[in-house]
Each structure stands twice: as structure tokens, then as C-alpha cells.
Length: 241
Image 1 (cartoon, helix red, strand yellow):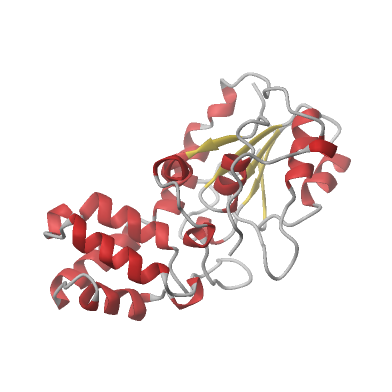
Image 2: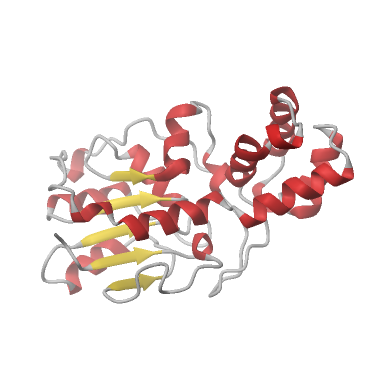
């Protein structure tokens, strides 16, 4: 059982307190960027658990596949969830990184899922206030609540298609609620009800909270063997937004 856990989380943790994320012994750090994993290994004498939820990808280089694989080779358990962590976990599933949650599973269910569906604009520091809405949160709301609100699968598909045409930074409340009406044909009441449910059940946040509550690494064995980092070839990579 490993107790030393390092969590890289930003906007996916919005609305959660430290207790929900497993305050000490969890070290909670900002969204991961390139070099962070190597630096963590340099300052830790013993391998532990790394949980990647959020990471930067435009304002600075994103965390690399190679540094994650180096950590796996060094005996660390590396889990991905919610956001960039879910992306990397899917890409490195054959190298030993482990994924968790509804968002991570979506990559198997939706072959053409674009990485930008997990992206958003947000405040640059705690509490990481969201300025736009990740499209996966809308997918989740439609799947979980669409039938109850009388939204047909065809209407859901039209809404998602219209939203996918927008840059992720434009997918805010006004834009998405407008598309609920124009693309899916929802009236004002159903649009408002769907939005309220979405905000109360943001799946990226739910996935992160569930992972930190269950802590599956306590029962997990050592990571699967991974190929040498120099020859790393991520499985089924997705295009970057």
C-alpha cells in the first residue's frame, strides 16, 4: 500500500475542498506541465503515487509521455483522471498508466472524441474558476438527464455537433444555452433545467472526487512493464486542440 500521493489538479477541483481530495498525506499541486514529473522524482527518494487531473497545454508545454513513462519505469504508480490526465492515461494505457472515471472511459465509447472536449478557459490560480464549460460535462448531462427532460437522442446529437464547432473557450453558459434552443429545439425552461443539472454535476469534478475517495492504488499491484522511454509510441494518440 502506498501513502505518498501527489495530485496535479486545477479547474477539475473547482468546488472541492482539501478534505475531499485527501488532505495530507496528499500533496496537491497546480496543473502539471512539462518537466514537473521529472522534478518530482528528483526530490522524492521513494516512488509513490502520481495522480494527474489537470495540465497546461498552450501557455506552456504539456507534460510529456516520456516523463510519465520514466516515472513508471522508476516504480511509480501513475493515474489519470478528468482532464489531461484522462487523455494521457488513454494514450499510455499500453505503457502502464492507469485511467479512472466516466471521462476516461469515454475515449473507448466515442472513437472520434476530440481532446478539446475536455478543455476550458479558467482563472489562472485557486479556486480555478471556470470561464467556459468542457463539452464532456454537457455530454454527461445529456446522457444522465436528457431522457428525463424529454430530449431525444437526435436532439442531443444535434446539440453536441453544434457545440463541437465552437472553440472550447466560447463554450460558456450563454453559448451552450443558446445552442440548446437553436440546435436541439429546447424551450427556455428545459434549457435552464439542463444547465442547472450540468453545473451541479460536472463530471470531471465528480470523477476526480471519486478517484480520491476510492484510492484504487491501495489495492493495485506494480505498474505493467513499459517500453524504454526513448522508443515511446503512445497508443491511439488524439490530436491536440
